[in-house]
Image 1 (spheres, rainbow, N blue to C red):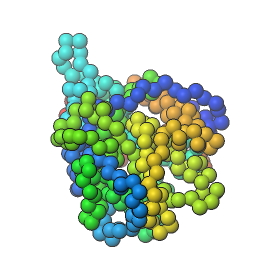
Image 2: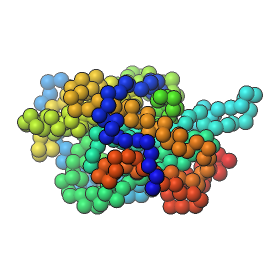
Image 3: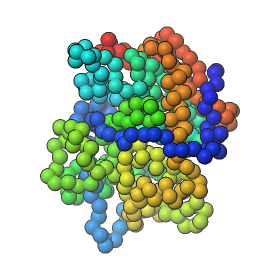
Amino acid sequence: MHQTKLNPEETCRKTVKFPTISQPKIVGCFSVGPDREYLPTGENLKYLNLPKPGKRLAIDLNDGFEIRRPKPDSAKQERIDHLLRFILNNEDRLRNRDESGGKRKRLSCDFVCFRGLLRMIMCTPYERRTPWIVMATRYRGTIYLCAKETEQKLAEEASQTEQQRRFCYYGFKFEQHILTDEPDRPADTSCPVNESEEFCALFSTTLDGSRVLYGAEMDGITPINPPLDKQTLPPEVLNRLEFVEVKVKRRETNQRQAQNFYRFKTRNWWCQSFLVNVQRLVVGLRNDRGVVDEIREMTLSELDRDSRQYWSASVCMDFCAQFLGEVRRLMNGVDCSGTVFRFTYDAERSNYVGYSIFKGTNDESFLPDWYCEAVE
């Protein structure tokens, strides 16, 4: 195990400037079907459809729990396959060309990953209990990043109680109540919730000199008329839409619960929303029985303002920029689909991010043959 220069705890103690970052732009989208199949369209895009003002709310998030369709365990084996399929389907727009405009060359980005991985890295300076593993492969000039579940995470999932599974389900059920396939159409909450279906947008940004292409599951958009043609959603249309994040939170009943919300929860919410330029969060407030009786709206700036005594957005973004820069430095000169750098962080064992190198055919490889063959 080698040691990097990255010390999240030290970063957390510093006063840092917000790194340079370009506004994230959408370059395309895809959907994930009911059986986790890749769909090259925006058919799973949803519209925000809030209850009429003044209507008394009593949304029971427990409804349908027994008949839900959970995401299958096989989804864990997908890694970044859906992102790779999108890249192959959109090569003309994502790859640089030579000066004559002929042969396709490397991707016009330094990194490819999912938003969740970036959010995890951003929150690391304030995370003391949850370790992580990130796999990295540099191939044809682009570094592909893929999160890997730790033994601790796998053990936690295996020992989940029914109540914990219900808490995870609450978010999906609340979305079913306020997100619809068509604008102004009442939600059908009687059908089973399918946790596999997704709408994913692909974003491009440059963070402190690193060009990043990342996919993010998006909850929904504010209603527009006429409705969109979801089969053809070009980037110029997607970038004009107002996306929203949908959340569920327990209604706090004391000061300590309120402090814990701003200390822990808002950090994840801010990082997640900032990366996709979402300014508006729609939050369902539930009681201990899982019933939502109020819907509030929060803005990204409010999350930042109200949480500053607990965490710093500048620290989060600065550490993410540090991480990407260090990965680029360490993998400079490496260009092989079978070579994997495994970056690990466990605050209980070390203050520094460590890494190991795996070469040749190995269990850590995550770029599939079908992708590499298509690129070649």
